[in-house]
Amino acid sequence: MNEYKIALGLDYGRRKMGAAIGQQRGGIPRPLPVLKMKDKAPDWHTVDCIVEEWNPEFIVFGLPTNLDGSSNKIVKEVQNLGQIFSARYLAQVHYIDERLSSKMASQRMKAGQKFSVDSIAAGLILETWFEGQNKW
Image 1 (cartoon, one colour):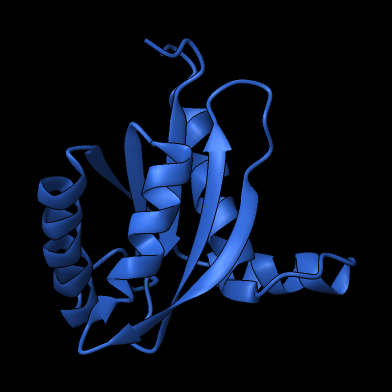
Image 2 (cartoon, rainbow, N blue to C red):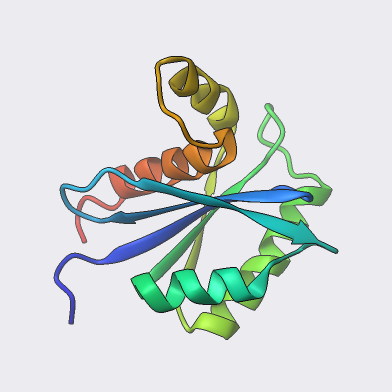
């Protein structure tokens, strides 16, 4: 079993979904190319290739809750997609609050990162989740 567990972070959007890959220890999440979305589903071939290459044990979705913490329609879409990912890839799926991740990603872009804001946001989602997993 891999001592350094790998996770795939995803920042859901109806037209595109940011993606990043990261290791639990010592690694900064690496942004991946944005996944195109159609009918609330990603380009499965591209996702299959990412999962085959990286073999993540965990898939972490950001939940786009409202600023007051309440749920909305998109949260249910993310959870539905998470169930599909779990069944398709036999990986543990986790969800974390992603409020303001896109704003923080935009700030990082201004600081010189040259990836899509969506994939930088996916990396931030992973960073936040890793911080909460310090007792793996």
